[in-house]
Amino acid sequence: MEIGAKLKDARSRSGLTQEYVAEAVQVSRQTISNWENERSYPDIVSVIKLSDLYNISLDELLKGDEKMISHLEESTNIVNSNRRLITAVAVNILFLILFVLFNGLITRSNYLIAGSVAIGVISTCTLFYQIILKF
Amino acid sequence: MLTWYMIIFAFVTLLGVSTLYYQVFRMIQLDAACRGFKHPTFWAVFFSGGNNGGSGILLYLLGRKKYPSVMTEEQRSIMVSRKKRAGVSLCFLAAGTICLAVSCIFNGF
Image (cartoon, rainbow over all chains, first blue to last red; front, side, top):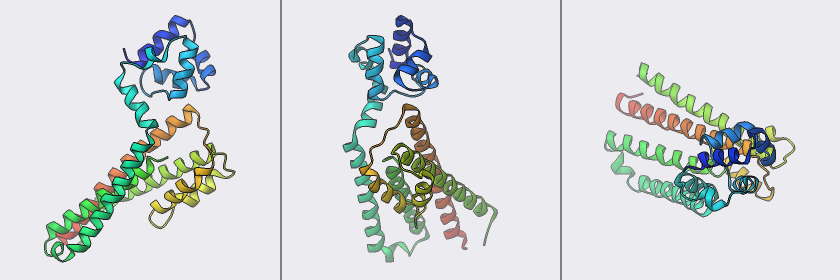
């Protein structure tokens, strides 16, 4: 069973309303609804609060839901996100060096120039996106 | 020579740039507010600019480390949605720039 269905099921069994849970976890009722319909996922602190509120173990809530596990991994794994950023910086520097080194060769053909522009723009945008993900 | 599709590519690029700037502005504003900065809008205007856009964000990301963030679940979901929108803006920007550059290279300016 996915986490949304588990949360909905646990709340019904506890006889609580979405409004009550929202107040207890300090989020809006809409957020509770989003979690239950899997439009978004709760963070680890909210999951702990919900497990206390519904008297359900974290094991029961989290295990068996691959999407939730990957969401938690993505939101808590700083080492991985730093690695992606460093890789993007390294790739950009590598392309810059390659463009400078093969400058003479690239300018001989329009196709090579267009390809270089495309590679440069894509790698820069990827780097910028990795920076944005740091927020 | 300027053709109709170059105008479209330029428009797509400008659309990407403007929406990206707006998303970055709102993200910095929200983050600054969550960290208890006194004038989040000022910091958002100050850091979302920069000579190429990226330097301001980098400075902000380095400078904010000393201030702990208290973000509610609501604000976190807004931030996630803004990141996604910024990603879409970047796609528009990249596609527009590449197409414009390629058409300029093969058709002349």
